[in-house]
Image (tube, rainbow, N blue to C red; front, side, top):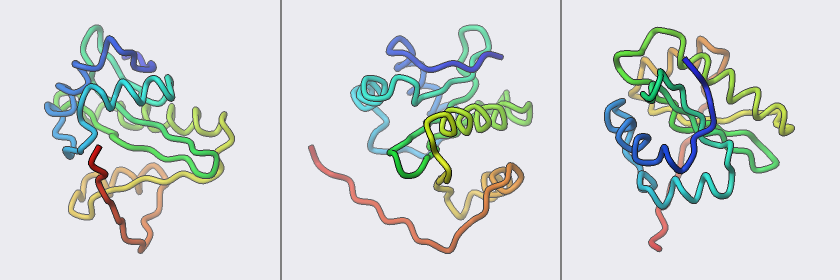
Length: 137
């Protein structure tokens, strides 16, 4: 298993992977959005690969104030093999090297397996509510 930054050549495979992995759909699940992410932050999208197969992903965001992780996903056939933990460790290392001291992520409260995973790797849930607004472009 290799962890590496995604490239433009991975975009279609990443979109297909997110569907296969059952990642929560988002308005930014399209090639232009991923290309924009990679253009702005070339090391922000980390993939775990098994040969040519994408087995996992995580998006690492740093805005100068707080580190954020999005899109942690592992393909069903690779789950419970340590890939998610390795992706989180890689993301934490990348954020720490950029100066992040506090990390943030969002978990759907109905995703009990995800909540258990994040707790197991040292994250604490808060009582805060999430607000979103999709901008039409």
